[in-house]
Image (cartoon, rainbow, N blue to C red; front, side):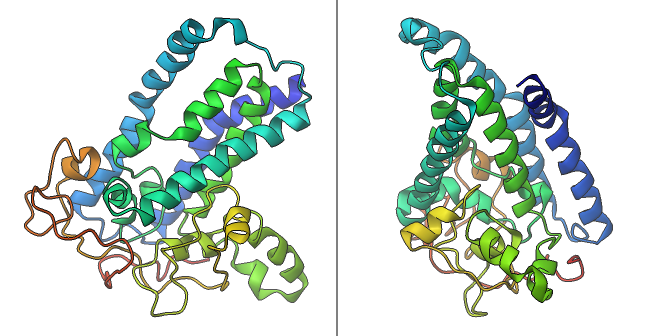
Length: 301
């Protein structure tokens, strides 16, 4: 138990950050960010800072102040649950909650505006992995579900799930197509078949970020899974092609101001016709246009 705790403490502490930085350096060396525009830089970097500096304060208040005052009698009530069952409970509660939260933000027009920022990046990579409207992030239900279960005594299972999920979701956003050998080598096809129906891989998650579906790969109205792609298989939103989209991006992206993308509806865009403007265009979550500024060409390995 102590070894598991030590491994996942380090993974959640400095391990995932190191993986993110090293992968980002590789992506940069492959030329992904050669056309990284000022607006996108601001949105990406501000999202990372908000996630590292502000969200921990909110999470700490919820865990250390709110829960002890609201349900003091339930602290560690589930501490008897075996590690394996605890991991299963945390994994399902966290990721299934996020699947539906994510899916609703694609299917409900007014919710789409809060998730739109994550899809406005015309590229995939470590820089945009945390790119989100801050209100969308603050209201992540899976965060509070996991914190509550931790308070109830499932701290070690939460640590394990957080580490594994962080690793999977980080690498699914990478522009480095590390899953490509699974599709190219026949002897790995069985491994590919199992993995692509179980967890999010670059091919399936990139399809979710596609600029369009005319290439037969893009599937922005599906492939919602974060850690587990299994939810898409179960709920009929999966599309598996073992290919990668031609281009990434978002229809009507006008490089809206960084503050509008991060803090809508507190701050709105001044760009006429923007979905984030005071008088927005009709929200469209299901149609995209080509984005030619940054593509994954030349960065796949």
